[in-house]
Length: 487
Image (cartoon, rainbow, N blue to C red; front, side, top):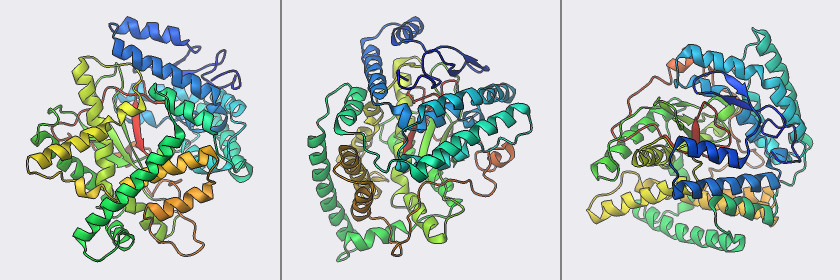
């Protein structure tokens, strides 16, 4: 994207990976924003609300080009190559297999373009994503000429990211101007970073007070710094995190339907381990995209890395503890992104093809708070309300650290120290390295059909859960697959 990245698959004059609906991939030059607008208008009647969303998305794309995102961020390149999307049953298996083979055939050209672009990847960014780059090759066995060429291309890309992780620039900051543009243009509103940082600090103090009150009610005389780590140790084992997620989906869905907060929409949602290429987040939701037939959506959960020691695995599983796991699941599924986007599609009466702003996606947070507030007014309590307080400081601290790093007021080490202090991470032995995101799949968790069947059996979701049909992603991974993630 942009003049500085002429070789990227999205740049003018170079091939771009794109697939027709349920059919093989085809090459086409990048369309201009005006062309994209015309295509949207041809499919649906003109709506001012949709036009506003599209305009904001165009501004965000320009801000990303000006910030040279494709030069320093490997994630769009990873998503451009990812073939895990063909696992989801959006079409017959034979069609998905042909599409996957056609996609792999374009890996050499796409990787060459990515290598031309990725010339300024900071070491912290590369280190965070090297596992996802490695995971792109999972399930590619090299049994065909296409796969052999794809693996060779993958090796070149992995080598570049590994080199950046080892010797790249340690400074990962964007600068205040670029950060403000990326945040503001994506939401079509100006952003005052200084004011935002002040609000993050004030929210941290407010949440600390509420957390202290909640801990005092639960265990009088025990401070949050002692009680919260104890609560985080109460988690299921690696296999248990998927069953626990299904249970909280049932519980949260029954609550919002029973309190008339969501209509019963039906649909199917599968829960299982994230593929290695998608383990750059703790959990994420992939749902049906625009103009795509309904198919089971997938709620991916990243398991701990097999290479970690037992202490590191326990620390990672704390994210899915009985205290924090429910908050992650309702954020992603019901009444979160999954159900909210389904309601949006149902209310519009069509499969929206427009980009949806990140802030609008997070409107599900308002829905959750509305659920709690309405329940309290009616004398009932949300089943997940008391479990969200320990997670909230992590989100606020993450915002404060991101602002500090990109404005240049914090180093990555400073941000890590603040996160450890404010977000109640479990204690580690002195000098021990904290786990990052998992980089290798657990035993048997390959992308083959036989291993998927034991984790991902298609399961009708409770009433009120539906495959989401609107949303946006950096690069749709399936014909129109969309996603949200808990980073």
